[in-house]
Amino acid sequence: MINPINEQQRHEIESGARQVLEAAWNEELGCCFPNRSAYAHQWLWDSCFHVVAWAHYGDQRGVTELASLLSTQLDNGFLPHMRYSSESQRRGPLVDRSSFTQPPIYAHALKSLIDAGLDPGDDVVRAVGQALEHLWMSRRAANGLIYIVHPWESGTDDSPRWDSWLGVDHWDLERLAAHDIALVDQTYYDSFGAATWSTKFVACPASFNAFASWAFQEYGEITGESIWQERAEQLADRIDVLMWNSDEHLWNDIALLGGGVSASIPTVDGTLPALVTGNRSYAMAALDQLIDQNRFCGPFGTTYLVRTDPLFLADIYWRGPSWPNLEYMFVLAADHWSRDDVAGSVAAAAAAGVLTAGFAEYWNPLTGLGHGARPQTWSAVVASFGGIAARGSTA
Image (cartoon, rainbow, N blue to C red; front, side):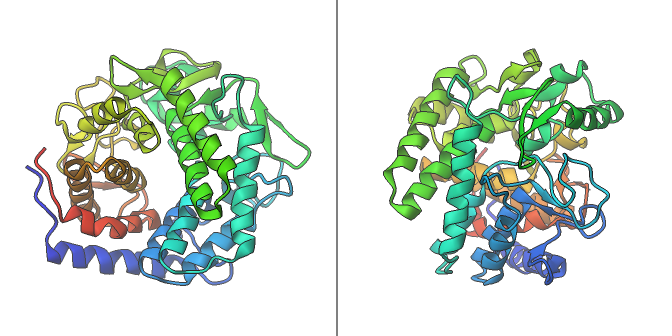
């Protein structure tokens, strides 16, 4: 039984999340650095989750941060996943920003501001559309799915789903880091400096495609332009047809260049197409696993891998811990299908995890022990689902 969040916990989350954001705010750049020591740069999807949190508080800095993020956009619409605060980074040919991207959560960030009564301005709305247009026109494979050209672009940097590209079946931090850097030189870039293809790594992640379909849908709701809904439905259909794994009841990634069997390792982000699928039976089967203690349910959050999988390591980066940004997405997916039992259970466990871990970057879902940067600003997003957590659930 996962107990509902109580009023004291909700207060601690509300006040603690706000303090984390306030302490990380960079007035000059108009954004939060995720952690001033470990992550002293601006990251794409980190900033998007900051915007969601700022919107929850009705704070105008959410508008400022989204505009700041979009100011890094290239002239062709491509949105980089990093803006450097120093010249110590090497993530493509551009000197001040990355040449890779990250999941397109910016449409949801935009909608969060509008839903909170904050006016983002026409330029911000237009820039989000340009970023989505670039994704649709420049990153669609022949199979109709969106592809990425580096694990960094997935957001789940060192997920075991990438192990086949590395040629290992176990956690090896040094080899993973070296592999990621080597891929930078094995990437093709366009004349603007944006990554376009790779000689070694091209994949269609289930979660990235789900986020893209969801972004098209939400942007269509904002603008009233039917083309975005059509694209959302088209992509969602491709996800179901090509990625559903009827044995695991999850959506798999697809390797286009390199890779192999690791693309089908059962990781919890394989539930995220529940955000966009039109197939209720698929959605229910995937969401049920978020409250199943033999699959992904833990007392302090969801496990990244199935708890019984031999690769599961509860304390090791993308090998088992809970991540607050993903917890937020699971809650939204469950809410989309009116699964209050799942949404309440995930939100309550994640709230307990965030508090126990001290607003950490990620944490052990079985003990709540925090890891990575502490505090990490994207943990503040949990404040936005505090009300859902109050529903609680039996798991």
